[in-house]
Image 1 (cartoon, rainbow, N blue to C red):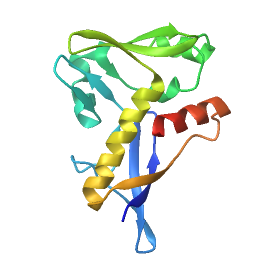
Image 2 (image 1 turned 180 degrees about the vertical axis):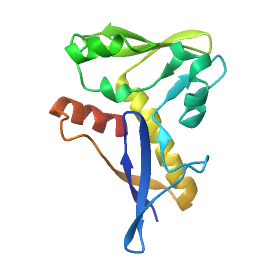
Image 3 (image 1 turned 60 degrees about the horizontal axis):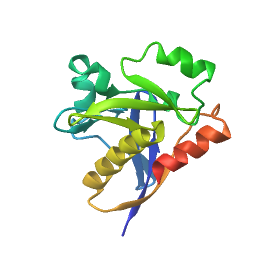
Image 4 (image 1 turned 180 degrees about the horizontal axis):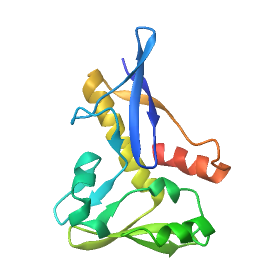
Length: 161
């Protein structure tokens, strides 16, 4: 039987929990931490998510994506997006009026939407839960901040599909 989980998809860290024995239990990742960095890194040989991605960020800043949630569901010319771009070590490009993330992965230039990056983090959180629970996870509740607008909420839903 599959289980449902709750995922807090955070800007800097994410966590996953399940409900059992009348209480919520936050599930630790493979590092033993109850929170996982919302980082995705691309190298010449692999894609890293979570702690592994964050741990190599200083050596690979242009290809280590973080804070993707700050871009999700926004327009490229949004003032906040333009301010954020100044602080990111990775490249943000305008694709169809939306911010996209450009990285080098396995020797090729790749472009990802913020939704795709968030989806990678969500998949990692699902894998953490499945490993702990020993069963498939088919349903999840994903948190969004109260200040998210409809576009940002929909983009987060799209990331979870």
